[in-house]
Image (cartoon, rainbow, N blue to C red; front, side):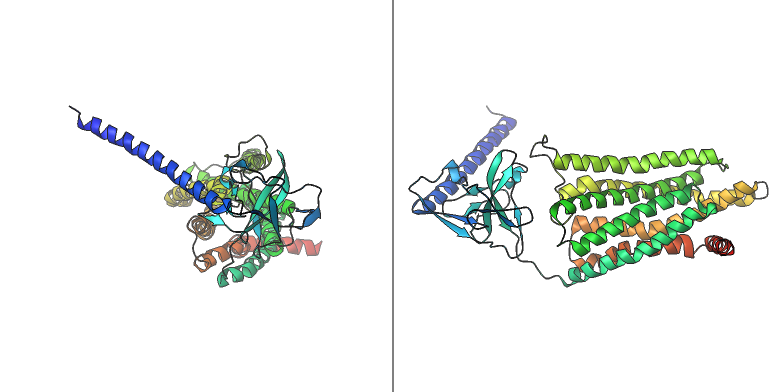
Amino acid sequence: MFSVSDIFCFYKINMKIYVIMLQFLLFIITKSQAESNFSSADVWIIPKCCPLGFTLTKNNICIPTNITLSPEYWGGTNPSNNTEIDVIIGDPCPFGKYRLEPEVDSMDEFHLMKNGSLLIPFQHQGFLSTSDYCMEIFDTPSGPTALPLICFPPQIVDKWRNIAMIVYPTGLLLSVPFLLATLFIYSLIPELRDTQGKTLCCHISCLIVAYITLATVQLGITSLSEHMCIWLGFLIQFTFLGCFFWLNVLCFDTCWRITSPLKYASYNMEMKRFLWYSFYAWTLPILLLAYTIFTEISPILPPSYLKPRIGYNCWFDNNQSALQYFYGPMGFVLITNIIFFILSARHIPEYVEHCEQTELALQVNERTVCRRTVEMFKNSAQLFAVMGLSWIMELLSWALGGPSVVWFVTDLINTLQGIIIFYIFVFRIPRVRRLVMQYYKSIFKS
């Protein structure tokens, strides 16, 4: 007698065999239908982007070539000398096109039919007609290869996206003068050049470069070459990651000072601590950038490996790449910042009470450290409340998508961070305003 487990196992094996046979049958049917549809055709068709004797460059410019376009058709068959080939010349893509690269990404596998239809089994259902793509010859590691360029679908008019393409670069460029003013104030005034002031300056420096580069890309995306676009994408990745890691240092330093025993540190100790911070905050973004560039240009990685593929929009061309090379590290830093903020918020009442109870017994330097730490916690809390929330919303907008209007406000706040930082760290603090006035009076007197 068979047990229940034996019957269940037998059933599972039969189901697997049935699924495999069904998949094979569907493949045979699809292949036979395609061959039956195309076998009666006396003329083989191929759509070509450029005129005969020309090929396409990466900048979508037709240039002369001596290489003849001879693609491989379905099943590895090639036209004989007696076969008539009808070449349809012209660019059928009014909204732009992208190239399939099966040697780089196995998902780009394609099959060209005799009647000019194109099958992309892993990306599209059904066949693409000659009005959906065109082919050209390109230099690849394996030699000249005929590759298809697939048309982008018609662009859906998004009113909020069009508004954002004007408002976002304006907000970014508007933030830069305020970031520069904050950077000059904290770097030129000696009383503000402590460890936390230097950390803030590094964070602002990364943000300035990131904003200028991002605004350049958004305003000049159509005039940038592909090579320039890729390197600008690398620069945006590095500078924004630098912003996150330096903000992580600022949150950690504030948390460490609040949760540790109150103690005045000498100049050498503070300098040593800042060097360790610099090693952490610069090394990790550099390593991530080097890893991204290596995976992008390395010929030794298999096609199945997830490459960054920074392309026509100067950014990662899919969510998987963006997650691995940018949003993943960004999310990790945001989570650690939340942890540091919670720890600081739990201990700040005890820290303030300790400072008030021992104020008379503390030395002048220790009182300064105490007041400065409490002040920096308040500033960091405001910075975290505004920017941390907006970056979390940025992460959610990337992950969830949706209409542009839903994320317009939080994205706009991100572009105006320069104004927010100036308000929090300069305009709102009486001590900083007083030091600025004293500094400029001393300059004018001299």
